[in-house]
Image (cartoon, rainbow, N blue to C red; front, side, top):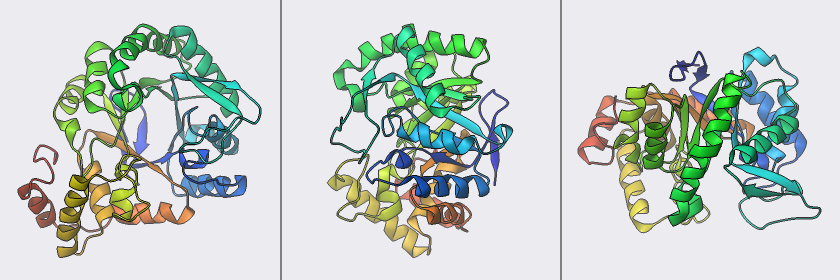
Length: 332
């Protein structure tokens, strides 16, 4: 599997990384043996980056990933987790939402210095491994905060950013960054701090290339490593426009359905699966170090690799550009 350097660090990541949200019971409750099997298959397929967060299953994803990572060589993988939420225990607590079963904890947003140190300390204990390589300030975006995002941005820069720099100076972590859903806010962080990397979800895909406007030029100038999440936009580019399929974890808007149909028609014309085009489009940009993919079935691992290596004629990309489905600045 291909590897690319993460910005100005000495970290080299595989093209596909393991996204830990599904084994935190995102959308579906998975049992322990299934999760361990998925992690083991991913590792044996040479995936070397495992990404998680306290949010995923309210600690469950970190717990499961840590249990697996303890069984393998610590020098053979990179581990990424996030800060911005700490957890407090509450017995028999269950919140209806995306996670269909989670640990008995309640998450609390906190981007202050002390809150981030508390979050990081909790993650270290849940993971119970000797290192965390990459730590990201999580979810300072409009998806979570709407019009209050400016307030949380300032709190993150005055608190979380300083906390992560302290941990990096102490050599507890190797790289610091942010993990967000908005490309323009990634650009804002990049302008105001010295970050190694950023994980951007759903804003550099066949359906949405807003990252090329502000964020990518700044990342290139500052040599910030880019990790992509949500390259299938939470399902539509992998599964089509079925009844239960989502776009950015919500109902698919009419204009997105129409755009997907145009993409699907062109892919069919060249006999190329849409998921293959989606993966290869996102990774074709040399600014991208890795793509974090959520995996909840072992068979998805091989399918993702096959799609990434599927032969796609140049004419398909030319037509997608001509039809203004993808921005011509994307194909770097």
